[in-house]
Length: 388
Ligand SMILES: Cc1cc2nc3c(=O)[nH]c(=O)nc-3n(C[C@H](O)[C@H](O)[C@H](O)COP(=O)(O)O)c2cc1C
Image 1 (cartoon, helix red, strand yellow):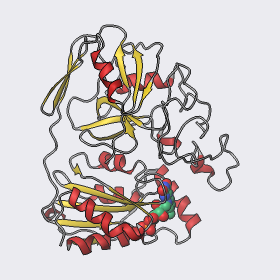
Image 2 (cartoon, helix red, strand yellow):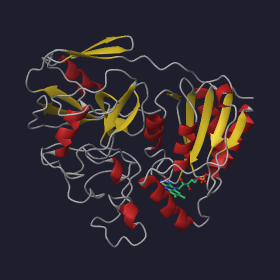
Image 3 (cartoon, helix red, strand yellow):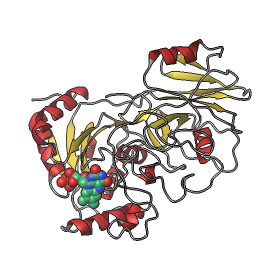
Image 4 (cartoon, protein in one colour):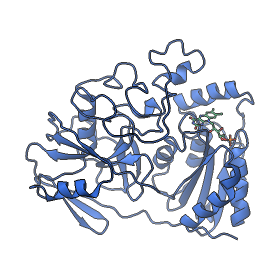
């Protein structure tokens, strides 16, 4: 998968952050070398899968999640530092979907910011105005890894928090070019296994502006599991595209196949299901399932298919993931979409099954068209799944 390396240099005080200068480069080696050859001391010591962060070192590093949000907010407490919502003229995101669109999708009457262009790729860093604190691209373009391992926030007031102490999933922030505005909010947390990359995920480097102290370690052992073993293809589909992809996967693997169905199915009417799906997402519903896997314990790998609904999973997928124990199993997602690829569905799955290993996903544009067969073959190979 193509990884985008985005370097924005920002000067950050440990949780007392001030002015920031910014500069862009794309994946330009000479710029990266310049960073390392400056008079800074290295921040990280890497030993296999473990990383130790020397907080007194003054070299470039990832921001913590708290530093990232502090910098992004620029003193604001609203969802964005931009009033109401960023528009497509303010940042590079899935511009059809400004903040609040979900509640005004048909009328758009109450929208302060109207839908705009969806560019479907990255743009040059600094193409839009800087934040009130002089930072570019805090929202959109590419999401940005932070140092923090994902976990529940600790209770009470914290000073310079550095995240959970164990786990392999790290937080990334800010949203990318294919995210809805709701997933770019200053407070929105996305996360993914640290060993993975994505077409819309980059980094923003920062430096201490005041000396820190101590060390923080990040364990990095991959949860046990692995692709292969006995495989189940499980899918939910509303209009048939995901079902078609599931059948193609079955044809190529010979694996068992299972359709996730509902006691109370969604409406057959497109406009109505848009509302129903949005309602279920807003209340984080768990629709009751009418189909169940009797022998889930027999399966090692679940190839899990669903349509992208409102930039995430349909809620029946959450019902399914909560019904069984997936600890130690591998879940390999495939997602049929209308342009938003996975949206935030991978983060949603990772949050629901903390004990599972998540394999490399496949996003399929609607039915997948004439390349479905070869796309599926390549993806199965990448995940180490044997084909017939
Ligand atoms: C309720 C609903 C919400 C949708 N939301 C999105 C979306 O946020 N992003 C996107 O790319 N496509 C979205 N789509 C389009 C579907 O992901 C796409 O049509 C997919 O191929 C449907 O798969 P299916 O035929 O298996 O149901 C949505 C469709 C529906 C019905």
